[in-house]
Structure formats: structure tokens, C-alpha cells
Length: 466
Image 1 (cartoon, rainbow, N blue to C red):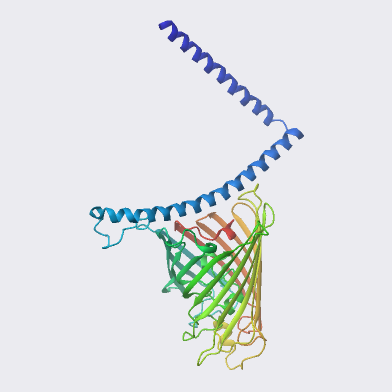
Image 2 (image 1 turned 90 degrees about the vertical axis):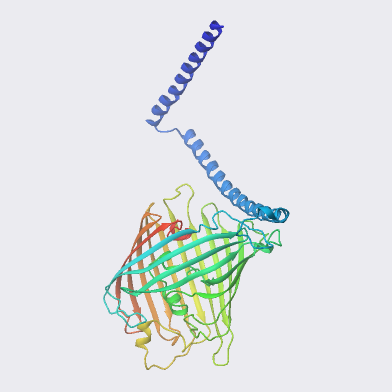
């Protein structure tokens, strides 16, 4: 018996010695090969392996999305299966359960994802700048905004979002508001699958007009919204109460593209082109087409329309917008390189003398008679990712005023963003303004912006950062 044990031990030691030498020899060979340039056949083989890995990564991402959708369906089925069981065992129901109903506990429902975002802005201006309260804001340092963002899965059918903002247009003076608060209904308990992937949003939110309006201030690719967006929608964009439905339209002829539509019913007013809060209900539609143009290229096109019927004391309002976004991001260079080219076009059929204007514009137009024509504006911007942390770009804006389409406003804004991490970003902007409005014509401004976030929410959307 001892001989057998001794023999087994000796065999194990011999096997270990052979494996150690075998592991050492490839390591020495790799060291020698690293000192020599690879031959052409070896280089071609490595290129082929990398291409296979890139294809596998793309397939894995697609599979992950499919599995996530299956998990959501299983959660809904488990909940439906649990309801009859709860009726058979009423004696084990917790105290918090309402009579006649089953408690539906979802992990995380009592512990929402919480994040806080800060936005600090310093500016240096060559001319005086006033806000809506006629306070001077040029050459100032200001904590422009702080947001508290809470998100929670209510149950397998819906998620809830509540975003409270503390805004400051004049340094040291803050106003508190609910920037967004809504429930996003992902599925219905009486359906196995929503038709066309329908999702409903109910509450107070940013309507889906164009590409820029849905972004919060800290999410913007530059420090301020483009001039056409400020002119038609408002300096902070357009936020309203309503119901929004988003659904996909099948595109069987092209497997590389998707088409989705958003239809919204909103309260009227509270938008720059139609500020009257006593307006009738308004309607908004947005169509978005996304297409993959190869491994590293994609293109997104969108069209938006807003309509508010006329009332007893108000005339009808309608305006339209078109947007596009081209994005290049090579898989092999990952986090190091990307390029974005985007823009929006906004237009209306007539002048709007009742529209609200930015303070500088309104002060310059006092005593003027409303003009005629069709308001129109557009913005274009391009952004290069220079390396992992630095992004540089430039934006060009041109718009007419809603009050008098004969008055033009233009600006050029080059910018540079530096990421300490995804949770801390510094940005430097320069803006040159040309305008038929005397108060802003020839103005030069430099903006220093710092964004920080702590919590579960990254500082900006994926299409800008990556």
C-alpha cells in the first residue's frame, strides 16, 4: 500500500515538473517573439482573430438585449402566476396588503436609484447680458443648476421617474421646480406582449420634439441650447404635462434599420412660440428612423410637428422640425475615437407677435411693430473624440426671431470637453454672436462649465459621451 502511495506521489511530482517546463517554454518563446517584428502571415492571422472577436462582441450585445426582453416577460408571467396562489393562502398575507389584493413586491421598489447632478458655470462677456428678470448675468460665477434624480421600478409593468431641479439664473437666487415626473408603462397585465412594443409615458416630461429638447442642461453637448431651440421652444427647452405613446413600425425590407413613432397629447402653452397658459390642448408627433451603415457607422433621421388648435381668444399654432445625427465609432479603437455630426431645422408658417423672446431681444424690440414672413432657424454641430478624455467640436446657429422673421441672429461656438471620469467633466466654450438685435450684436463670451454627479446616473447620454 505504501509503495502504491509513494509511486502515485512520484508520478504527480513528475507531471507537475513537466507542466512547469511546458509553461515556461511558451513564456520564453513569447518574450523572444515580442522582441522581433511579426511576420506577414502572423499579422494577417491576428487581424482575422480580432475581426472574429469584434463580430462575437456584436453578437453577444444582441443576445443580451434579447435576454433582457425575455426576463421582463418572465417577470410578468411570474406575477400573474403568483396572484392565484395569494388568493389560496390569505392567512400569510402581510399587514401592508390591501383587502382583496395581492402585494406585488419588486426588488428596488422601496429603494429608488438616487443621483445628484451639479452644474457650475462661469462666464466672461464683452457686453452686458440680462436674464428674464432684467438682472445682469455677464461676468459672473454661478451654480447654475442642481438636480436630484430618482428612478424606481414600480412593478413589472412600469418605472417611475422624479427629477427635482434647483435652478439659478441670477447668482445666489434659486428656484425649485419639478423638471420631470412621470410613470413609464412598459407593458400591460392583460397582454402577453404590447402591440408594436408600445410604451406609455404619463406625467410631466420633456416632449419628443427634435433631438435637443429631450436633454437636460447638464446633458447638452455645449453649455447652452442652440439659438433656434431657444427661439422656438425656450431657453430651457419645452416641458409640459401630458401623455406620450412610443411604438415601433416594422421595417421588414431592411434588417439594419428601425423606425419608431411618438404621439403625444399635451397641455397647450408654456412654450416660447405659444406661451399662453390658457390655451387648448396641443398635439405633437415625432418620427425617428435609425439605420446602421456598417460596423462603425450609423445614421439617425427625425421629423417633428407641433399643433395647437385655435381657441376663443387665441389663434392656432403649428411649427415643424427636422433633425439628423451621423455617428462613427470604430470597434477596434473602443473608447479612444469617435465622430458625431448632427443638426436641427425648425420652421413655422407665419410670424408670432405674441411669442415670448429672450430678454436681450425683447428689450431691443420695444416699440417695434411685428414683422411678416416665416420664422426659420437651424443649428449644425460636429464633435471629434481626440482621445479617451478629450472631445472637441464646433456649433453654428442661425435663426430669425418669431416676432419679426426679418431679424436674424447667428452664433459660432467652438468648445472643448475634458472628462476626469464619466462622473466629472470640464468644458470650455467660446461664443461669437452676430445679430440684427443691437443688444447682442458683436458679443464675445467665454464659458467655463463643470459638471459632477454622484449616484447611479452618468452625466450625459451615450451618443454624446461615447
